[in-house]
Image 1 (cartoon, rainbow, N blue to C red):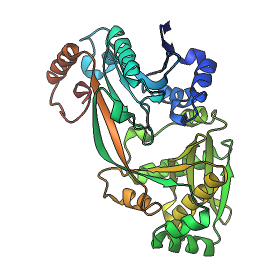
Image 2 (image 1 turned 30 degrees about the vertical axis):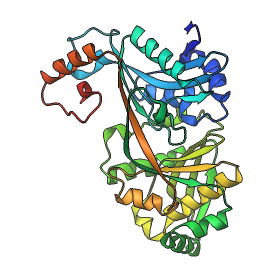
Image 3 (image 1 turned 180 degrees about the horizontal axis):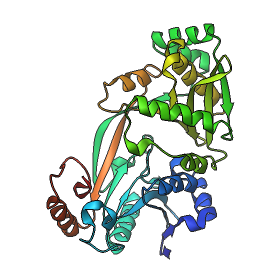
Image 4 (image 1 turned 45 degrees about the horizontal axis):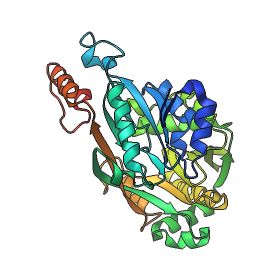
Length: 348
C-alpha cells in the first residue's frame, strides 16, 4: 500500500522489505522480515513495515499488528478485523529516522493509524536511537539496560570488567573450556536442549518457550545470527544465540547446564562473544537488563561486563482512538479484575 510519502510493506514483499531496511545505515536486526515472521509464527500478530520518505526525511518502523477481537475477553463481543493495536516486536523498536522533520513522520503515522482502526500502540524503544524524545505519545523510563561499548581492544575491555569477571574467565581457561562458533545453525539441537532445560529451571513464562520452527526461521537471517557454544570434554555445556546488525549485536537467548556452573562457562562465553564482535567491527554489544528491577541479580551480572554502560530503557504508550479504547476497557472490566499498570489495559 502506498499513499503520498507513506509505504506500507507486508511479508508478501519480503525482498522490498529487506531492501528498505538495509538502506538505513543504522538499521537493526529487529526490523528484518525474517525476525518478525518468526514472531508471527509465535502468535504475536501480523508484521508490517511503515516507511516514510518525502525526499528530505526518511523513516521506518516495524510493528506487530494485532486483531483485538482475538483477545479471549472479546470473543463474540466485537467482530474480527475491525479494531487493531500495535506492538514493537520482542526486543527493541520505534522509528529510525534519517533527516530532521520527525513531526511530519509522526503526523503521517498517526493519520495512518486512525484511518486503519488502530486503537493504540505499545513501543519498546531502541536504546541508541533516542526516538522517545520525539515521540507523540507517553514515553516512560522503565528501567536500565547494559551496553558494552566495543571501542577498545579485548585486552583493555577485560581490565574494564569487574574483578570477579576476570577471575571467572581465568578459572574457565584453567578448566580448558573451548568456544565453538556456529554461523549457520548446525548446532540448533544442542542449543534447544540447554535452552529448554534453563527455562524449566527458572520457571519461565510459557511465552519464552519458542519452538524449533521459530529458531529455524531466525536461522534464515544468514548474516545476522550466530550461535556460541562452550565445549567441555567434547560436550556443549553453555550456549548463546547472538543476533546482530553491522552496528550492534545482542545477547539474545541461551542457557547453561547447572551441573557445570562451577567451571564458570558464562563469563567465558560473554568474553568470547565480545572478542568476536570486536573483530567483526561491531560497535556495541547489548546485554539487556534484568527480569525485574534494575538491582536484580541478572542486571548486576550484566553490569559487571560494562560498569559504565548503563542506558535508560523506555517504553511508549499512545492511544489513537480514546473513545474506542474506553469502550474496550469497559468490556474487559465486565470479565473480571483489570491491571491498570498494564498497557493496553483491555489486554490485562
